[in-house]
Length: 219
Image 1 (cartoon, rainbow, N blue to C red):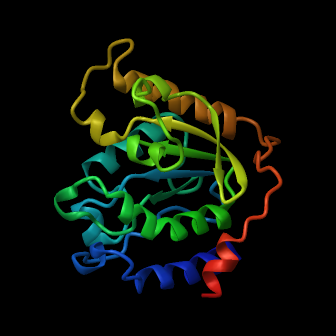
Image 2: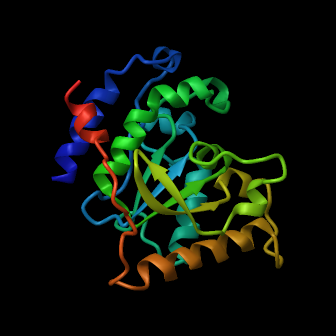
């Protein structure tokens, strides 16, 4: 059922010309992971060059590093995590997507979350975080990462946590105490223990009128 619903959204996404990124993309990068088993939705920033070529998110160097960290934490990329991005097309030169580009893609992002109904959402990097939370000048990703919060997606509340984007870790190789890589390990262990360590854990979705998928599939 989830796969069929996602296929409908994917088809609409692949024909989307809602922003200028549609003119330069090679492939729409929709998702990766098993929708029937995933208990976590991980949201990244945007596709890079290899993602644009393959149509899959997080397959370049940063993606390989992410997979390594997930595996070490005991989290299966194939079964436990459904991976998506704030935008589905690659911004030129891998720049950060604009607010307008993110807004054009938001209906697809929200529909994916609506269909999966994850027990937790992992916001991977600052762009993903800022798509759901407004930060003041004193709030940096280094200060908010690793903290559980609640985010609203079309009237439905989800448990969420922020982690460093693996591209940041590519520039920080230290494994010393307090280093970004060590903090990433700690955050993923936290996610593993909190979400995957207890099969009775509730998906923490509160009452809300979520019409995202229905609205998207009837337009």
